[in-house]
Amino acid sequence: MMVTMNLSDSWTPQQHAIHRTSAAEEVFVALRAAIEAADMPLGAKLGSEAALARAYGVSRSVVREALRSCAALGLTRTETGRGTFVISRTPTRGLVLGNYSASDLYEARPHIEIPAARLAAERRSEADVEHLFGLIEHMEVEEDSAPWVELDTEFHASVARASRNSVFKQVVGDIRESLARQSETVNLVAGRREPSNIEHRAIVEAIAAGEPDAAAAAMARHLSAVQVIVDAIVSTADAGERHATPVKAHRSATPKDPTPPTVQG
Image (cartoon, rainbow, N blue to C red; front, side, top):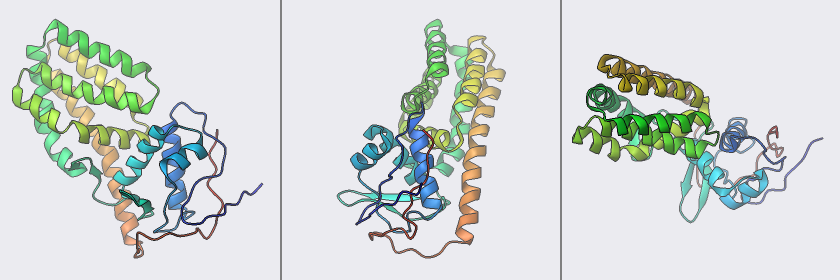
């Protein structure tokens, strides 16, 4: 049965509440599908976090996480005091992840985290190893996206600390928020949690075994795998830009087809 919406100046879904483990991923997928299918036209204003949370049957923090990934992909823009607006139907080329871009992280991380992993294998303490294995064990059973992202960023910061290099420790600390946003976006877009868990465990096992070359290689494989997903997002953005139409943002709009996307509960 078709369900219609009566929109005034903001869009909210009218559909079944979400009852899946990764609620943020489901909300993100639903919002992205609605944007890409033009259920929400360019320039349309989304409903408030509270309204979207009620409509989807999730918490505001889940909606906030999904909206951050929409913004990181360049699909939406949030303006303080005004709301969130659709600005593109496809991801934009320059992914913004906190204070840094995806390309910033891609260029810097291999020069920081690979040698940090190598040094960690040489200098780690028993307490470092215990902490790293504890993080991995928590990540492998964590099914909620937000806590997993926090564990992910703590893992990378912990490897840097175990290197006993104060520069690596400081730099990873400085980019931690951007690492979290990249982790959040990559995992919502591509479901990278399980592969990341496997890659993280390989890094820790090499560090624990005191094998610097293996630790560096494991970190390099992990960073490369993450970059494959980022490259795929950028490739989608390039294709979208070739077929893009100009958009006048910051206006309220009513979708031509008011039927919201269907989300499986």
